[in-house]
Length: 228
Image (cartoon, rainbow, N blue to C red; front, side, top):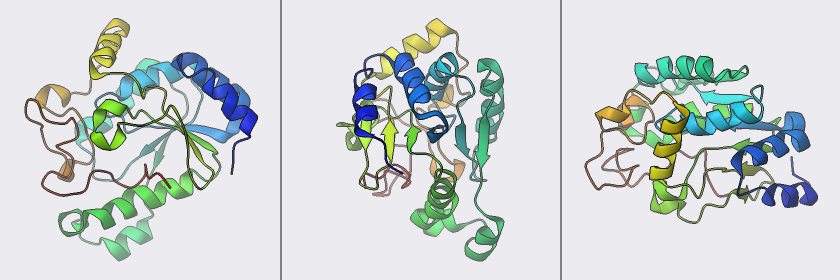
C-alpha cells in the first residue's frame, strides 16, 4: 500500500511541527495511518502529541508476552492520562508460540527468532491495513538512527513518520516535564530504552541509550524498523 507523492510532499512541509504533521497525516490518510508505540522510556511525548492532534488515531502496542510488569501498567496508565481511545494490543499467534517457543525461552538462545515471532510477524499482520506507521524513533538514540528522516519511505512502499526524529534527549525530557507527563517507572532505575524484560538491562553513565538492549550481542534492532 503506497502513499501518493503529493501526500508525501504535504507531510514533508509539516516536518517542523509534530502536532501539525500528525493532524495533517490523519486528515489526508484517514484509516491508512496508525501509531506504533512501545510505551517505553520516551513514549509519553509522542503519544501526547498524538492525543493533541487526534486521540482516536489507532495506537498499536506489541504485547509480546515478555514485557516488564511496569510497562504493562504504564501502558494502561498513560492511555487513560492522555485520553487515547484506540490503543490496540498486538499479540503473537498462540499456535505459533506453541510451535516455535513452547517453553518461552527462545530469547535466551536465538533472540532474532524470538523478535521475529513476537514482534515482526505480529506487526506485519497488524499493519497490513496501514500505509503509514508513526514511530517515536530519534536520531540521537543510537548511531544506527543518526540519519533518520522525519518522513521515511521504505522500499516496500510503506512510510514511517518519525515526528521526533530531530529532538534531543534533553528537549524530550524538558517537554515531558512541561506537559506534566508521567514517566515510565523504570527510567529512574537506569533504563533509558525499554523493551522486553529478558533482553533489556540498565545502562551505565555515558553509554548509548540503547546499550542495554540485547547487551553483549551485535543485535541492535528487533527487526520492525528495517530500512527495506
